[in-house]
Image 1 (tube, one colour):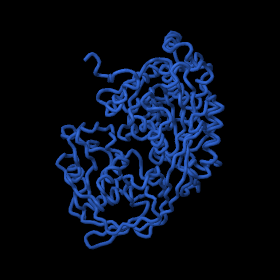
Image 2 (cartoon, rainbow, N blue to C red):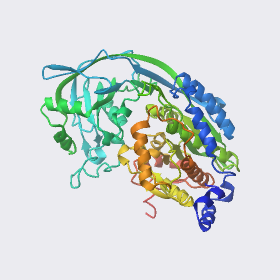
Image 3 (cartoon, rainbow, N blue to C red):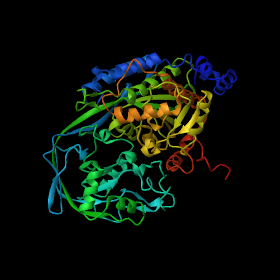
Image 4 (cartoon, one colour):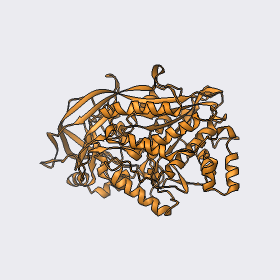
Length: 570
């Protein structure tokens, strides 16, 4: 919740009074968010000393003690394993070396593919070499099997030992009005079926040796320079030997390369895409074979989540969790200016700074009735690994977690008039967002780039999959209506950041940042957490949400029968 002084700067006096009345007096912060402190934390985390904060590197060894120091300074209690501040996350780290061969044989010709300009790949298997010898390539449309939507791109095709080539996003992403598939997968709003992570997982379930997603900037939500930013590096949660294994090789292929493969097989790329938007689509044998011989540097590493808490005064076993990720992309190839460190300042050092400010505000006032948990996750940039490991090995039960609020990539372009909602239609958390934004004098805007699938791309998703209602605060979700310059100014910032600096060396701290907008986001999530932490509310998923049934299974742990928004009064 904003302080009286901050609200007065934004709202007429009558609205200030009503806004403050919306939250009990004892939940108000003693002071508002301190933008200088946010800037200082971000500056340190994004400094050269931290080397881009990649897991398992000297950058992590500097990051973890600094975060523990900041958690202590904010007034938190340790909430990690064995009474400490951290949770260990076992990972493998792989780094592709210079490929000795990546080629496609088709129509009697062998064509070498350039890595990483024609094709980008990585492996999350603990192997010292990737060898694929003439594996048949099969185009499988969007690579989706969704019985509940009457959709199956595979039609029983045997993919064992083959390479699955798939389109990015959902089958209805480019559908025109009147096409049968239009709206079946949310239209422009990406479902989880549109995410590359799902596509890799589905290919592995079907026995494929490799999976390649065709890159198109609009459908992916980011250009090729973002695709290749990991530079052949990958992380994964370490799996037992008897666990189902991922594909041996996974990655992206440029549209032009995929179109050429289809053309040589006798197909037109655009015509095939139209066909793939129909339920009648059948996999296409590309009459091509992929070969690869790539050395891999592999290491077993132990990374860490940092976790703190404020124990609730009345309901300590009920939790509201806040989170953000501490990792960035470490050291990579030099850019045009020779810079190699990708510091991850906005993504997500600034998000962690906002979370720490919320922790400080809560700790400086009366103790909330419910327990508040604050976490800095590892491995988000490599597939939500830290939060996913936590969700598999929770230190606080998911069944009695009221909600999760996640900060991931805040903007530094100044104050805004609106709050952007990611993933409309999921839960009652949207009502809490609207109420808190209104108290700040802001209104709610839906994400204007739903095709980017942001609801499935941040650490909150690890909690949503376990039924915990969630909210994501992410500046990449849409162009803000800026106080100075309106929506056009917001679009300029968003376009510039995603095109030039997202996961790149220029996502760096600057003393010229205007963090008033980031402070608004921190205060917004503070207000939502304060309301939930001092109430008996259990936000519900909407009946139409895919996560409602998961939450229903644990209703007894919360002492109430399952009730979903949209089903009341029945």
